[in-house]
Image (tube, rainbow, N blue to C red; front, side, top):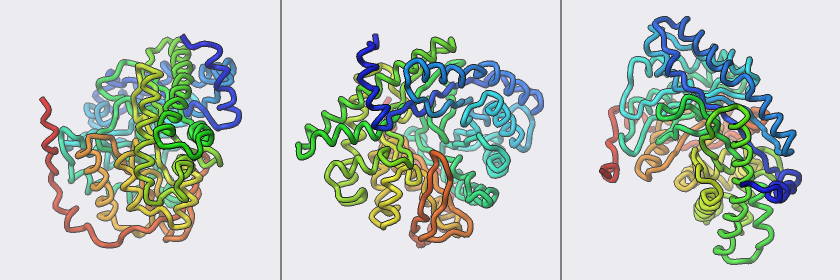
Length: 452
């Protein structure tokens, strides 16, 4: 039971510390929407999404009104379209993206995820068609997000796909250059992508998930920072315990919202994703939490250790609060979406190489990073390859969402708006990765993948 006292205890967190339920995401299986023509399949997709999600936004608003809990986003995730569209005979999958976009707008949601493919061990014909469609699909839609899983601890790294995604990211940037490469902000590549992630741009409904499910992502960097301000000067054991207690309270709020939404929509409750997902607002920054540990600036030596401890304590506290914690759960470190990260990147205290080190212990990876528009595709593929290796060999989820902004160079700034924020163009190592990336093939799975 979640008591009234627990709800009241969190009121101050919402009012003063930027706590919010970042998203209610309805996962909808489209397995039964396959058809022998793309027109038939798209109609089935549209009909099913709008049938299941027609009340999602309304229910979210009703829960906000009842509990005074801000629910920032209402979203939909679907079965990877490369699976659903395979039988349709379509050569270009842009029409499927347009169908998802139309359905999302009809339901009133912020984003819809699932223009996706799982290619960690190789391509199907359908996977290749979907990936080739990404630049146009993301340029002609507003709410569609795309994700591609390129690697896993069990399978290794598909370096052909890594090479190709470097080119696709460049093409997507060019296709949306009139919007400062905004298409790339809706495109992410993964290692070990979770099937129940409610956060965009990586949300999709995996083949092992139910017909329909409610997954909730809750945030609260401001709450964690405020809690740490009460233990200034204490040792790190006390700091860890303080984070755990705050994470417990945050997760209980998410559980309340998730179960209420599940009941009202008559859809099973899936998971709570307790991710410290920052926003550009002052007071809602993961970077500032790390500085509260005692670092002069996020990016100083010790930052990776502080982030590791933060991530672990958040997961421990959240796991005690709910039996169904999943998704990505931990700390996000997106540059453009975090006021503290933006500042230290602008001042030069935080560079790509340090961010890469931090991704070894955060919940995702190199996220929402703007880079010069003339960065070669092979260099982007090299960045992806490094992150895929970190995920594959450390048995964790890692991801890359970089944005090569046409016409922009180091020192410039790019504005994405809303939760996507703004970012300085960060410097990229110019040493070539071309010969390495052009080899292709597959990096084998690590020895510890053989655990049977």
